[in-house]
Length: 168
Image (cartoon, rainbow, N blue to C red):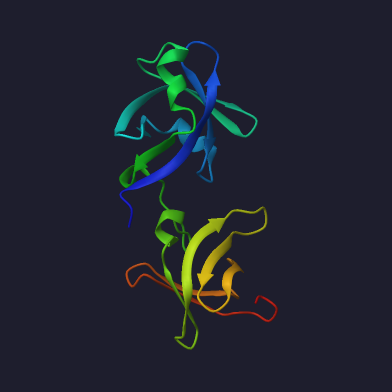
């Protein structure tokens, strides 16, 4: 399991006083109100940025960080990811998983046959869709619903699925 979880991506600056617009990659953007800091992936290191102020604009979060008071101090980080340590993450409910934990799972059919590897999760309005790379079928999109996803075992790194008619 990953030690860090991505919570957002800096999209652009906001104003000239060092604020940034962040596209949240968490289900609940309000989560930023509870965070004291984020870790900025500069490309060379993870830099701790203490959060001074949080505002919301449309689907974006506007963040102000302590010690960054000029557009020039933050502009170079456009497109960079913001992370938090796993211990700062929100607790999940039953049958909820962090995307980072699902990526790379071995996907097997209900009869135990190897099917592929879960590459990514597409978040849609109705339900998530799992993107699975299958050796036999190429890219397969599988809805994350109870009828298809029978079991997720993070300790064994496997997901057991049922392929409904018409999915292949």
